[in-house]
Length: 272
Image 1 (tube, rainbow, N blue to C red):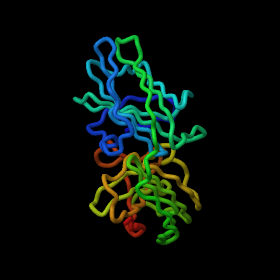
Image 2: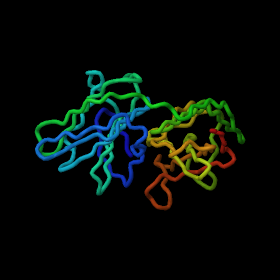
Image 3: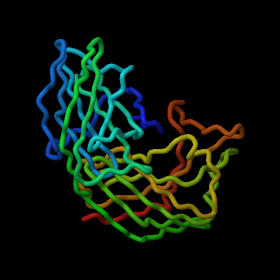
């Protein structure tokens, strides 16, 4: 999934869309609206305080990528960083709004969503009462892990049905990458459960290329959550490598940024 830093969506493709898979968290099951032979419906609308996810079922047509969805809350139009994920061969799409910055939402609100279909003039307008989902886990471990000159403390962890958040405070010099002429980025943190399922932290190239300091406070987000609350999670610190041209080095496949994990800095946290 791609989340862009503006109020307008970008269309991406993915094989699965797990963020909208848990029917038990549905806040509204909407009947379809039909215009000119095209029917749109909203089988799932979920909000956890960090993100608003809306599943759109499309029959007889698809959303128009040139006419972006318009979101209003309690009568006021909202602008959030937005992504729209489509699944090849599926008639559903997932609209995700990242709730951050100055515009915040209350725990309960009335949502109006205006959608447009290709070659259909009349908009599809949905009105849905939305209630915030409870967090599955909220922890303030205050646990510190140290190796050499570098240490970090996990101050906060939150897991909701949609995503996860981690707040980390680090001190000291980030370890150098062995057998490399490149420079280490600042430290980032993936999360893995006791079954080996890994959730990768959401980062941008700007984050990766920013110069690491001796003290750093990070508010990190993870685009999806584990299917169930794990017994334990392990924090897996890692760095990217910046080459002599200032570019992020890629792995052997040439498609993903290469990571260097630091096993001696891993931290296990009990969840339940």
